[in-house]
Length: 439
Ligand SMILES: NC(=O)c1ccc[n+]([C@@H]2O[C@H](COP(=O)([O-])OP(=O)(O)OC[C@H]3O[C@@H](n4cnc5c(N)ncnc54)[C@H](O)[C@@H]3O)[C@@H](O)[C@H]2O)c1
Image 1: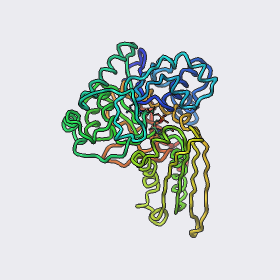
Image 2 (image 1 turned 90 degrees about the vertical axis):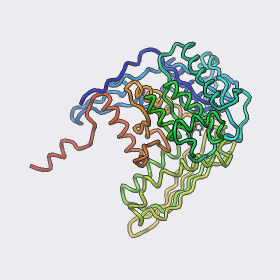
Image 3 (image 1 turned 45 degrees about the horizontal axis):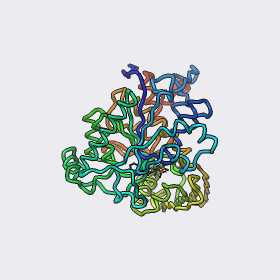
Image 4 (image 1 turned 120 degrees about the vertical axis):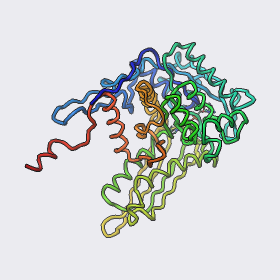
């Protein structure tokens, strides 16, 4: 297998986070604590996962990070924007995810991370109003100010490369419009303050103009519009999204394939969540909820393929609810009530009650995405990175194919891409025994 040419991870990697809330601060504090040897990066494939190379009888299982030139956690430098001026320590305290002990151990480093002023528009996030925001006459001017922030961050920190990850609030649902269809129309829209250009699109535009890879961790429309995917291709920048797959949907995309693999029917799937963090507050607005609902709901249709198996899945009733319930804070509780049917149509029920910690699940996803999208850029990969679908609820995909949601397939695709990048054969699971069935 020819080895792909990947430039080395020389120097520091700047991780620019849009939004300095629960997910971002849990991620940053986690990296600091791991670098100090106080905690372990549980949940991160880039730090912990082994990858089989060659046949099973060869017993070669190096770590992913040992076969590819990933940036090291020690080389990460953080920058952020937020609509509130709290530094990362204050923001982490308010998010109330980490223990007092952990917060104090990372305090010195967290206090140094002060957010830059944000580009914000309350039409897109109804339940928040911030004070720490940029003033600009046009959306193009806002984009220029963000580009200056990026350049200044690079100069001040001396990083050699950067990635940008949206960990900001979920914006209201909007549909693609004419202004999103080409770079020209989009730039014209920036100049004329087109109402369908959201703050997240302005951040993504600024990143792509600066040749900084962009990852969308929320479910809203951003970089998945022709204008921005075209810009990513044109500037040779990788992009990925959208909506981190962390809790209920992670479970759903592991369970649903099992029903299909065994040809068991599903008549109903009711998913409900209660959460009390700021994300929950934002999602209690109908516009932001709609972005999340569509992202969470899309998975079953693609996995179960009711068009191929109408007798098993055509009448599936799928409902998703998210309720804001402050006492839970970041400790989300999710219930899934699943009605399935088997042989001769006999019904059965499955109940799943996941008491999870949202940001604890999201932080390693942010870490892996930062390191993998940086790797992609150094491997000269550009445009939509479908091999990172594993990390997303609503994976971006090229228009000619449907998105892959099945967690096991996504994982295989991720690992085979990594094998390919490292110059190894993909694993097809057609082992030696396969050939031994015949003389
Ligand atoms: N935690 C998870 O498991 C998970 C999973 C999937 C997606 N997400 C998404 O990740 C995002 C972050 O989640 P969180 O729990 O950290 O939320 P959070 O509310 O704690 O943090 C979001 C931060 O973004 C800031 N913000 C909003 N608009 C901004 C803008 N235009 N520019 C800069 N900052 C802005 C807010 O002030 C806030 O501090 C949310 O959209 C959430 O839906 C989280």
